[in-house]
Image (cartoon, rainbow, N blue to C red; front, side):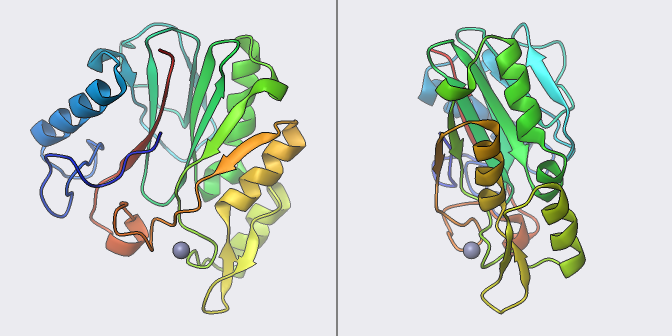
Length: 228
Ligand SMILES: [Zn+2]
């Protein structure tokens, strides 16, 4: 599931269900919001696992929860029952993966850099190590900035396209643009993952979602996947 803005304790400009502790929001409010999220999905708050995201391709396999410290990486994978994995976003794509049969889940942070570095391929490989099978994996591509809104230089479009093709597009204004979810769908197709669902919402256009590009100083929603 992916959270949205309503229902939290944070005040403007983080109103209100901001789940990020690195954006200048009051730490106590973020704590309340994180506990609310854990309770909402029926997971012990200490077993809701976060990461320090750096737009890279590192994957952490969570082998015990809570982990000793918040891992620095852009994808988390686990097979531990009762554990939830969370990815923080406000325009980048939250990618949630699950092989329900094998009981193996993953959460990845896929922005322009993560896509160029194939972070979702690495996450899937880690899940396969834990016993997941590509044919059984279900993927949700959560709300993100859309291709009509995401203007970047032609140079950046070319860089991403040469490494991870499928996202090149034109924005509403006719400028070079990137459709991050289209690029990810192509990547999953190449990986043999057929069950890919894309949430069509655009973070920039939907006021119920946090958007960094729209608001600069703002909160983050979370994509969350868990094993009951
Ligand atoms: Zn848009």
